[in-house]
Length: 495
Image (cartoon, rainbow, N blue to C red; front, side, top):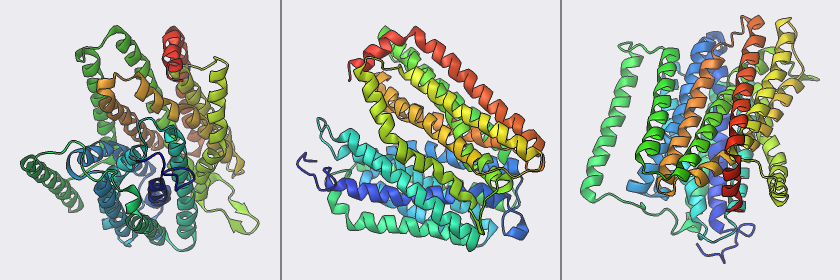
């Protein structure tokens, strides 16, 4: 795209197309996600599914983990078969269909809807993010601020989703809330189609396409794979296959972890890396460990913290009852408020030659996130006494989690791009994304120990999560001191 295109706040007009498409997609994703555990654990009399907390949390972890994992084949489909534009379009349609299926008042359609949303998000999410970068020339200095604006759209969308879907959940019913998510995705698709001319030349064709013969075989393979998923789903519904979600989540967590270690080791030992590249790979390994641990705690927001908000938080303000899902909006609101301050913080530290290493930043983020669970440890002690706690306990926890996220998440992504061997950059980003999946599934397994009927056990659960995360953070911080000098050299050479 031309650097002369300044049609959207000094950025290419195409950014507005991608900004609003992503905003509405995130509205639908986060709005629906906030309902999942609440809907699954609600009793049949409350028109929920009546699942145990352990099963509901495991399903939640599997779903959120699958969303990140499916981004890998989603990016591959865009690169080799469809191109980014078409992949985003079809992904959005599949997401909308998934939300419509969830809006059907039948428990039999629930998992089908989740599968649709997961597959659709895997197609849309990585490719719309990639197209943002493709709006800019390689030397265009607006790229970083363009991503900052785009990231703002993500958080605005999530706030809208939490408030709209949370309101409908409390005042109209579960399936109206799921329907609201479908409407949000529909608005995003309409906007995308009407303004697609703004991204002409971006993602219109695959970057590394198959030959027609190869493409035909690949499409046949995809159809067979999807047919297999459909068959397994059907057999599960009729009772031929019985799936224990907790056991499945445990196996999937192990499988993803094995894949991560195997691929990482393959690149490290078989990638003909120089000694300097191997040192960077070690530093990046600890960033990946910190990422997996961070998300296993952070993603309690949609599971155990969500249940705590519903069952043990005083949500009354006068005569108004705060919808449970609204508490999760605190994270997005804090990100919008705090992001400029953190961006300025890293810049000012760099000017003073005080730039912390990637590992140290991630360790700090992990420890700050863990401190949020110390807050919940104290709050849950009051709940264990039969009291409903004030909302500020959860708000404080979300604030600390957000500060931790801003220390770790963008830093980790930057570390992947700068510490990965350049010839393996794309593969290493895919390996890094596995840490999101691993963290989300572990988060679901941990949240399964949150039993509302055993409230006296809650303080121990939150204390264990906190102490483990703090311990990992301290170990990574100490190890980072050993390699601090060359990591800082790497950062300064790019500053």
